[in-house]
Length: 185
Image (cartoon, rainbow, N blue to C red):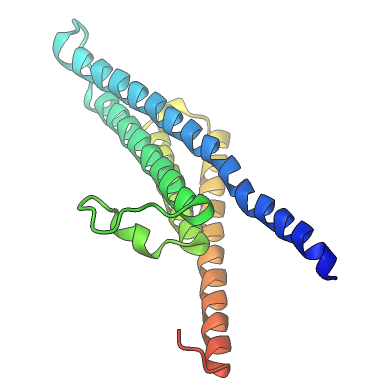
């Protein structure tokens, strides 16, 4: 068995090193976030232009829909930040941010479970914005589309609740297991 130890050690190092294959994925998400900044600025310009410089004024409903679109872009950008920073920290390498004044508060206690719950709540927020936009613009949307958006939103809510429940059960099981073995939590 000892003759296989060097081979197993090398294999384990390759497996451990493979986490760095995710780094380009996070860089790609940073580029995608740049695309969202571009889209946000375009929509903001569209709002300002149509509000102040266009001969045809836009109404309150149109302003509300554009603003909800801007909020939607911001929420997606927040989701990207959570995935980029939290995913990198959890799955690739620790970020050396100790003592940095801009370190996100949530980063100090991020793990895969916390990240999943944060992502699911962000998705629910994004879905809520889309649903609100649909309700505001209901006269221009068919009932079938509205029904499916409500169903999908409800499924997102139920999925998030299920994730929270599973995370709570797993945390309690882990704490109980540690207590039974005399390990502090």
